[in-house]
Image 1: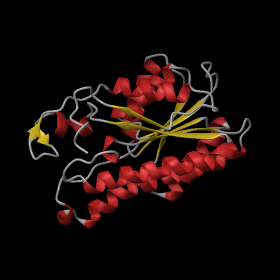
Image 2 (image 1 turned 45 degrees about the horizontal axis):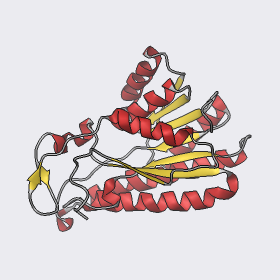
Image 3 (image 1 turned 180 degrees about the horizontal axis):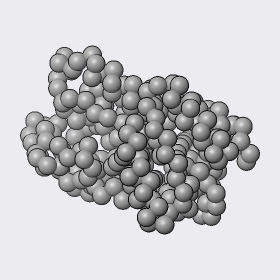
Image 4 (image 1 turned 30 degrees about the horizontal axis):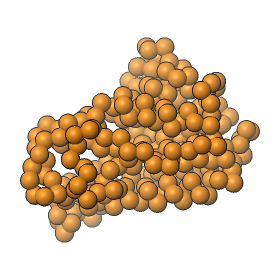
Length: 256
């Protein structure tokens, strides 16, 4: 890719709110046509309206549960039918688990986190590879939404931390296996971002690795969007393999 994105096509999962909405907005503003995927049609329609109101490029709303292989296949079939190609996949959708000791985490919560945070991005990556390999010009870019938890865990965050370590494995494997086909893959590891999903961290002191409780500020999602836009804007011969973006005063360094 270059600074002239032209008719570039981007797919954002979890585009109905938070980070996904902010990144979709930034991509549309930069000239991308954006495919908005997520489980809630109403939230995706709100994102689409935001993009249109701000004069961004067009968007395609495709309600999708990325945990379901058939729905992911249908998503990518619609991308190919509408645009004929895909230049960028932002594997963003993800969830957390109840903050509990490992022995108290319910199996259902474990499966829900792993299915959403690991299986979903893997299924999307599979379909992206199939399309990016055969399209002309060949190739594209995949950016995975990781977490600083893949570097240093929070206390009582087992399922989420494990899932984000798995995303790091997905990123490395995808970057390696994509080389012969001009498919670049990178990962953005985020600290606390000021979204509804992270409000429990920013609204009250949260447990730290040393056993103390401390308040944490959240990063404006626009800064995340700017970082993703930078990664996406590189030519395919260049790649940001890992980028960490976090609040400057976040108590991360020293906890791991």
